[in-house]
Amino acid sequence: MCQKAIVSIISTDKPLKVFCNECYMSDKYDPLDYGIDFDFNRSFFEQFAEMRAKIPRISIYNTQNENSDFTGHGSKNKNCYMSTSLINSEDVYYTDWGHSCKDSMDLYICQRMEKSYFCCGSEDCYHSAYLENCMTVNFSYLCFDCRTSNNLIGCVGLRRKEFMVLNESVSKEEFENTLSKLNTDPIFNGEFRRRYELLRLSVPVKNYFEMNTENCSGDYIYNSKNASNCFNVKDVEDGRYSYEVGKLKDAMDCTRVADGEFLYECKAIIDLKFSKFCNLCYQSSNLEYCDSCQSSHDSFGCMGLKSNRYCILNKQYSKEDYESLKARIIEHMRASASADGGRKTGEYGEFFPMNLSIYGYNETKAQEFYSLTKDEVLAKGLKWKDIDPRQYQPQSYKIPDTIKEVPDSVVGEILGCEICGKNYKIIPQELKFYREGGYPIPKKCQDCRHKYRMSLQNPRKLWDRNCMKCGVTMKSTYGPERKEKVYCESCYLAEIQ
Image (tube, rainbow, N blue to C red; front, side, top):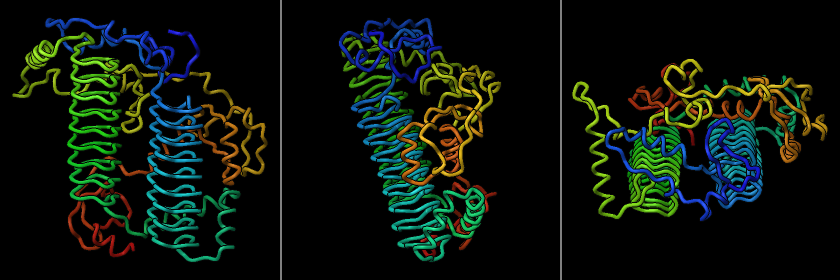
């Protein structure tokens, strides 16, 4: 609309109208201008797709941010960069799903972290690196399942400890010497990590990770009740089959939802209630099959609504006409189904089909959890985003092993990932962070670093297995082939104190 240069999560090869946040939210754009009548001779999804293709999209979902243009789905952030699902954070880089973090980098599903690096599933930690499932751990490095401790290196399952290396007490001088060698000697670092992995196999782990829960199953569950088959969730009550959500009640099949109630098959939601089959809807209620709607209510099959009500396919109706037409459309979607062994396979009752996505499969988080090749994706009738050869230029700079050897000029160099070959760069704020923490420059791009952090978490799947201490039957995200000592909750708590 205004023709100014913008940052967007929608690449320029997609034939879509993209507006900056100011134009998108202004009165100069009305989503009802794109409304259409429902045609009972055609399928709902076909009509929705045609209407949606004409409606402008917001360039990137960000609200109340300062100097954080290169972040997506974030709010109340300051000086943040290349991060997603970030809230109330400051000076945070290359992070996914971070809340109230500060001066940190390369986090995945973390809260209230400060001066922390490359941590996963951790909370309330300070000046630490390479933590997994740790809480209130400070000045520590490479730890798993530790809590309320300080000055740990390579430790597993510790509580209320200080100055420990590989679960053994050490002097302050030995601790500092070990930490220095880990950051400056790659050979020592590699050997130390091998010893750490052996230690992890010797210390019991709980069948799944939880805190303050009642009648729950899944993994990484906090402060929840009756959450079944849920993963990476917090403050959930009466929920099922949901991933990466917080403050959710009476809901099922939800992904990346914050503050939702009575929801079914919804994703990327904030403050939505009594709704089904919705994507990217905020502060709304009573929506069905809606996409990117804000502050709207009682609508069906709409895209981009802003403070609207009683709309169908972006066309305004009275309350009575809306309710009548909506009922007829749902019946049409059900009646068009064909019987298959007594099971209907019609349009109504499932989320939007994958082939309606504007993104290539490998541009989405689906590829992170369910990786497919290009041929497999195309065989399913889905889109694929080919790599841009301009992002794979040869690296001409050799990264030193220690941060002390890195000059200021590194911020002008084009680096190449040692895993995938994709180019990446070091920004000045990032270089300052590495120098203050003593961390070496990474040799992997941010995408491969993120992929590695995701691999640290257990799969979103439950197996039946027996406690390796008492033999009781239990559900666990540790598969039967895993080598860890997996205990039930009672046996775990008896040993890890």
